[in-house]
Amino acid sequence: MSAPRVTPKLQHEVEQWYYREARLLDGRQYQSWLALCHPEIRYVIPGRGNPLVRNLERGNEAMISVEREMEGADSDGLPIRDETLPYLALRVERSFKANAWAENPPARTRRIIGNVEIVAADEQTLTVWSSFHLHYARPGSRSFLYAGQRRDTLARGEAPGARLLLAREVILDMAEIAYPTLGLFL
Amino acid sequence: MPMRVRDVVNPDATLVGRRAWSDPHLYELEKRGIFARSWLFLAHSSQLRNPGDFVQAYMCETPIIVTHGTDGGIHALINSCSHRGLPVCRADRGNAKRFVCPYHNWNYSVEGRLQAIPQERHLEGRADKSALGLKRVPRVEQWNGMIFGSFDEAIEPLEDHLGDMRWYLDAFFGRFPQGVEFVGSPQRWVIEANWKLPVENQLGDVNHGPFLHAAVIPPEANAEVFEFGHSVVTAPGHGATFRLMPEDAPLERVAWGFEGMASLLAPETHAYLREIHALALERVGPLRARMKGLTYGIFPNLSFLWSNTAFKVSHPRGPGRVEYWSWSVVPADAPEAFKRILRGNHTAFFGPGGILEQEDSEAWVQQRIGSGIDFADDRPYYYGLGLNEEKPHPELPGLVGATANEFYARGFFTRWREALAAVEDER
Image (cartoon, rainbow over all chains, first blue to last red; front, side, top):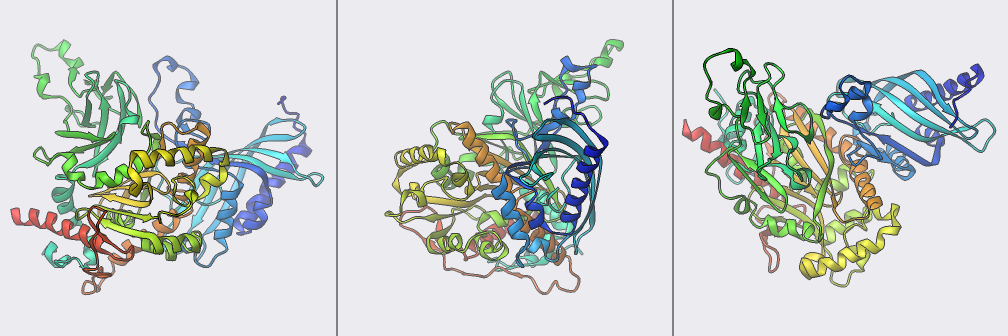
């Protein structure tokens, strides 16, 4: 992965991809969203804990790095979710059944995607980090604000110019999990 | 006029009043009658292998540090400084030489002894440090790596409390020559629900599966539960549900691990699963090797979900709020790739992002709302399904019934009623 040469055209194209994805998810078009996923997708929400401060790291940025707090897919810890395409497909299938009771009536969501930064690029893939705020309102409950970061890998699709989501890591900025669900597509 | 517990639940617990799930006064009685007098699950020995290792835990709302001492013992300490009450440990888990209060740096050994009061170097007098250690949980015992604590010094031994549940726990844990290990930190999340409903759900309520989870659980899986399912109560408040598969059933339908997504996603581990099943026949015997577990519950608030290999504890946070903890459990000797898949098979279906659990937690929240409805105190919840249909079994310890029989919940609530009434009577 070389240092990316980010042209305004590439930046624009990638941002448009994220806006379209957000529109599909907030519009509950999960089947269309699933078509944006690569067959080899890895979808991960790391757990976020409170580790001990390491004395050796005092005075360094590493001491309080976000990464230290994460129990991710490749750690020996416990992520909140660690899923491949069959799991995501099962979630999509469930969404369109009348007896998916937690989403009947369905939640109303609206997400704002920002800080879209192409942090690495090669011929085949782009590594893109972005931030989101997601408003979530479930009938019969309160409204909630989800905030976090996505660390994505986008791969080229078969159609010219198409890009598919090959990997997503969602870093949630909560201190305690007090949301109705983390089973939604973030 | 506070609610009397005998008026909230009737003697055979076929009727459970809504206030049992919502009343703050009854919640205080639960703390004193149940959480102060029971064995409560704290941790697993795989999390505390080395001296200095610690994990955080709760006993009801009381924050606990569980440590492996330099003396080799396991200690459970209340996480609150003897000087001004701040927590002396803020990390979820790790390895420490000492716990230091941030306020005035009183510091404690991992066994909870007060080691130093920094202010004393400027003073003449000396406080009696031997009386100022972290408050200890007086009873800590373990069985097969499961560590429990109790605030009741006179409580019966842990093994007696577990009783015949040991036979059922062994049916799973006894299969693995190297035992099991807990993976990383537990998932912890807050649900606006009463702590008892997650407990009841895992204690024996298999019967909600085909209905609440119809969107996800395939009909053939439900059919297997109806055909071969058993519900067992070894003592009131404890329970186990499982399928007892026929002797001639093909190995893939009986052996642990072939169910659900895990084996589908990891066909290269089938040889391991066959080996474990062969060992099960030897280690736990042919009867228990045919057991294909569903859910277990241990009074008051520990659950084990065999199908997705998770331990869960329902920590109350008042009558209407629970902090639910869920640990992923894997056989210590499983291939690394399979451990990852088992971990995913837990988190995809259960926990805060679980495909199944999202329906459960919504049901639990709505039940809390239903339990607070005005003008419905004369309509307690009906717990009478299958009354007196449970029977002794020639081979299985405890009373055994159909999975739709609610005797597991009646058992829980008769014990609950007795425990709370005992506190009321002491006044």
